[in-house]
Length: 160
Image 1 (spheres, rainbow, N blue to C red):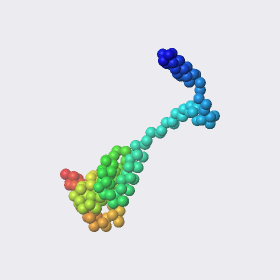
Image 2: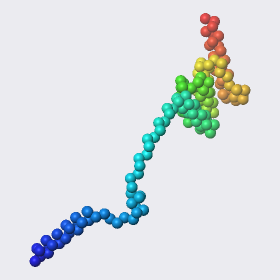
Image 3: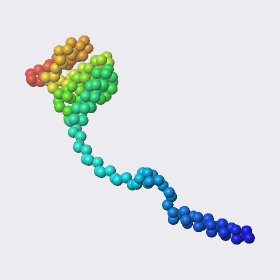
C-alpha cells in the first residue's frame, strides 16, 4: 500500500512539474512591457583626436592656476615637463620656466630660481620680466644676475 502511495505521489509531482513548465505565469501587462528587450544603442560617434598643442596649453593653464593658489611645489612639478615641451610655443615654454623660477624663489631656493632664468635666457636671449616682476626683491635680483651673466657669455663668444 505504501508503495502504491509513493508511486501515485511521484506521478502527481512529475505531472505538476511538466504542467508548470508548459504554462506561462500570469504577468500584468505593465510588467510585460518592462521586460521587453531594449533596442541596442547606436554606436558612439567617433571622438575627434586631441590636439597635442591644445592639451599642453591646458596643462600650462592648470599649472599656472596651481602656482596662483600658492601651491609652489606642485606648480614646479606640473611646469617642469612643460618647459621643454615641443608642442608648446617658445613663449609658452619660457613662461613655464619663468614660473618655475618664481616658485623656487618663493620657496627661498635662489639657486634653482637663477638656474631657471639662465635656461630661459638660453632658450630666448630676448626674454624679459615685466616691470612689476623686475621689482620683486628676490627674483628680480636673480633675473638681473642671470641676464648679466648671459650678456657676458655672448660678449665673450663674439670676442673670440
